[in-house]
Image (cartoon, rainbow, N blue to C red; front, side):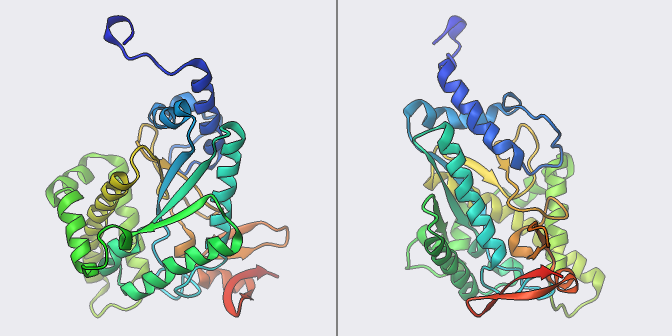
Length: 315
């Protein structure tokens, strides 16, 4: 312990490495409060997460909940399997680990915590489609030679003896906040409220068929949004339990001070768009952008890869 019982900080060399690793991530930060010239010292929670593996000379493990499944809305995506959007996002994550390795030679890896099963009954995607998506992700990682990436999903948590409904119920019972506490936080905390609004919007857009009125669908999506948020917290608890000491990335925008660090995978019109809610449009200058399928196909022609729809190329 240091003076007055304070815990000493890491040695200067370790602090410099932690700052260099975080500086590698900052250009890709996904946030609503991001600004030019962000500095590592503005993110003490992330610097603390990096201190352990840096001091121990071990690889840094990033966990990234996401890559759940494709949206069930055919106006947004090209199908139920990964396509060019996922391929580019996976390449980006592997390359990001390589850049981290340049400043932290023990290296880094990303564990993609594919969370489709935890939400499937709330988002209207069958569990077999989610299995197929996660299996195709693993195959894509192997085919691309992305050696710094792994995939973790609900199948690896409770074994094969339980149904997916039983696994979801266990995760929710053990790790989810109460509905009352979540509703209270949504009212009092602005980032939580924005997350709730963003999830509600996604659920509304992703519902391809609904038997009731538009206002009834909106009420249903608001109800399901709270369920998605509770399950998300439950999945976060499971991920933390299985990957202790990991640096927590997020595909959602995160404010400064959050224990999670939002990461932007590809260019998109807003900070909420992901490869699994959209498809890729490649521009003549090589720039790639995530757009809803209905928008992308108006602006380009479809490209196949391996006999399956992959992305669009702008004319």
